[in-house]
Structure formats: C-alpha cells, structure tokens
Length: 289
Image (cartoon, rainbow, N blue to C red):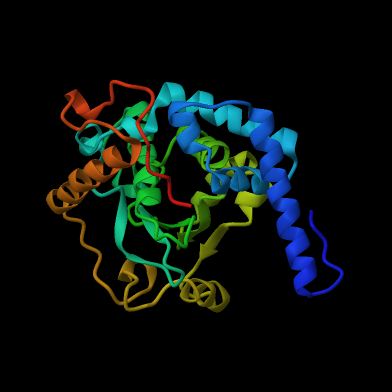
C-alpha cells in the first residue's frame, strides 16, 4: 500500500502520516459512535481493520460495521467463565501459562479433547478465550499465537466443518490481525482431507499465518523454535515442559480475569451474571492499544 523509495526517516514519516490519514478517514466514515462501540473503535483497532483490508477505507469501514453489529448482538465482552466453564473441563482450549518469544499470549487448542456437542456453546467458549487472550496481552503487543495439538484427534471426534468455518469467520472478520501465527503440530494424515475443505474458508492473510509442524521436518521445527523457547514449550509440541491442565486452577484465573474485564468495560460485577445494565460506561478505560 505504502511504497518507500528509500529508507530515510522522511519516507517513514510520510508512511505514518498516510496511515494516520486513513485512520481518520475511517473514523469520519463511521460517523458518531457511543457506548461500547466508541470504546472498541480505538485508533489501534481501526488500523487492524485497515491492515486486514489492505488500507482500503471503504472495505475497512464495512468490515468494522459488521463487527460492531456482531458485538452488539453476541456481546462477547459480557461472557463470563461460569457460563462456559463446562466446555473447558478437558482443557480443549485454554490460555497457556507462557508466552512466545515476542511476548504474545498463547492459546492452546486440543481438538482431540472435545467433550460437548453444542456448537453454539463451543463457539461461545472460544470467543470468551479469544477475548481473554486479548485482555492479557502486554501493552506493546496486539496479537496472540495459537498452538494446536492433535493428540487423540480422529474422524470420530474431529471438528465439524461448520464449527471450523464459524471459527474462521469469527477470527478473520471480527478479530482481524489478532492472530500472529497458528502452529498445527503433527496432524495425522487423515487430517489432510479435512484441511483441503477448511483452507477454502481462509483469506490469504490468515492462510499465510497457518503453519504445519512435523517433528521430522527440520525447517518446520526450526520455524517453531524461532517463536518459542523449548524450555517453555510443552513436550506435546516438541518442547521440554510438561503440559498439565488444572481445571480448578484455570477457573480461578478466569474468575479473576472476569473482574478485570468488567472493570475494562465499565461493568458492575455485582449485577446478575456480571452483565452491565447501561450501554454507556462512564469514562471507560482504553482497550489494549
């Protein structure tokens, strides 16, 4: 989008000015916002949508408006752990207790540990954990990493195509530029047929972030090690650490994070389900930049 003729500070400043101009154009195109929509649409947020649509203002505006409609009905910021805890009993998706080399939050996904049959609840659980991963990002980081472990995965417990499509849709369209990298570690050969269908739901940007890692493939292992310290990485992903999911301990962490999330969005946690009664929160804190 922004081409440089050289590496001078002048070129960098010009590029930054052009990006800021694009952000302001999207802001103006959206018109006045209030409540949670205003809180969500930070400058950093607008930039992510612009990057996802190659800095096209009209396409970025349309994408963002669709997200705002989705958030107003799905209300991901209102989901609380006790509502989805049953989905997390086996540790099929959870936030890891370590970060990658860039300080990013890491989500571990283990599709072979599926324990329920409700696609709606499974999606709600995943959305909760995506929101939680964003909540726990350091100030200088906007993206998360995914590690997908295929231990125990088979055709009998695989992820339905609809579920995979919905996951991709939510991640691509409502959390653009939040995924830095997704490592699929040692998937079984039978997964290839499933992947041939699923890959068509991925846009080019997301497709480039999905990496297959095979223990006997030196290049893929080296790529993964460039993102993770082997001392932190669980043995299931070729590292040295022990992967232990403690549901009670994780539930305690999520309960604490629910309080943080409520404060972030200006909710009163003493209301039923921790849900806010007012749409507009007084002087809300900014989201992670």
